[in-house]
Amino acid sequence: MSDERLVSAETVARVLGEGQQSKPEPLVPHRYGSVPLADAKELFERDYLVQKLRECDYNVAKAADASGIHPSGLHAKIKKFGIEQER
Image (cartoon, rainbow, N blue to C red; front, side):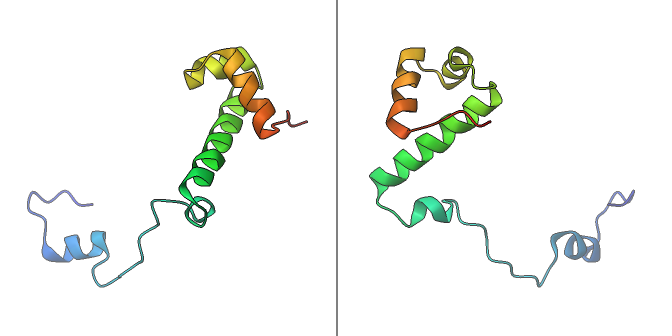
């Protein structure tokens, strides 16, 4: 940007990229958008739990706490989704 107190039209156009029409990113990743809602929810839940487990070095108690669920519930979901610890 610049030190000007007033912003010129040229500066606005340059910063905003006037004339460049880019297609916005979809709000729903393609992986979820091409399946029925119930399936998309399960895919998301599995992805979410895998991410939480990775963040917590596969410590189930910590991942459950970070996810806001009881550890026994997380164990059930790990079994349901066939999630295995990455080596």
